[in-house]
Image (tube, rainbow, N blue to C red; front, side, top):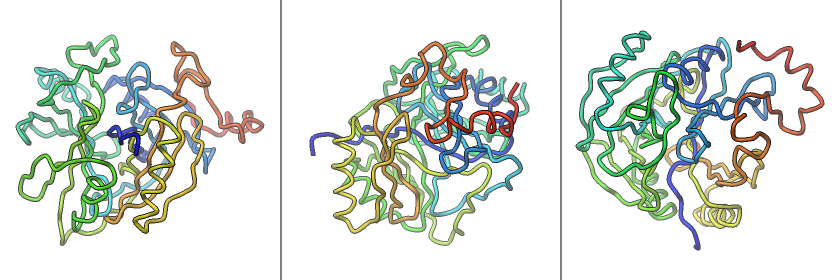
Amino acid sequence: MSGKILGIHHITAIAGEARRNLHFYTHVLGLRLLKKTVNFDDPKTYHFYYGNGVGTPGTILTFFPWGRIVTGRRGTQMATEIGYSVPEGSLEFWLDRFQQYNVTYNKPSEKFGEPYLTFLDPDGLKQELIVSGSSDARSAWETAEIKASAAIKGFHLVSLTLQEVKATAEILTEVFGYKLAGRHVNRYRFKTDAVEGAAIVDLVEVPNEMRGHLAGGSIHHVAFRVKDQAELMEYREKILARGLHITEQIDRNYFYSLYFREPGGVLFEIATDVPGFTTDEPLDELGTHLKLPPQYEDRREELEQVLPQLD
């Protein structure tokens, strides 16, 4: 195979109220709203994309805000934690900020030698701010209140909770090119050397844990990154060769995708770097317009009436 999996491309989660989600991620956490569009299968629901200033793969967190959806439950067969990379010395800033905005959090701790701060978003999505033990030269998006000295750089890791890790680990190592980088009790850390950031997947093995319930505050899927469509289709053949079902290539406007459910039950996506978020908006206007997939453009007036007001 000519290319490699380049770490995490994006992570997609489910939220409740759209305005609350938008405020938390752009104001409290200081991410940039990269794209305001709609769910391909449910155009009366927004699809928000957040990330750094230019929408670099490995920084992109997306949400389907489904209004009054019930709260989900973390468990097996799902991704359960998102870890963000933040600068050294910034956790005190975030502790103060979380207190200011009544964010639920735990006191800082350490894992694999890296300090981290766990918190929940307004829908209960579990996340961590992590001071990476390795280099992270990515440029963060700054706001009036959150400067580069504390701003989120992008993903550091994602954690999957599984009843048994062996088959999932084989996908990561034998197909995606990750290597086992460490183990602590029931947490197995896998890392790729193809990129510096967004390079880690933790597998947490809990044989007697209940299956998670996917709803508000849950991670819907994890997308892994490839350079282009040619490499995407090479990975499709590798997944098929292992006897797993995988979709045909899907055009998601800002990237091309394949979806498959890995043996542990977590929905994986493989997504391309191209064409990117400036395909339908200039860089300085990202996230400022409602962008509709072509099949819904003739319904713009209707959808603008039914989508929740954000101002």
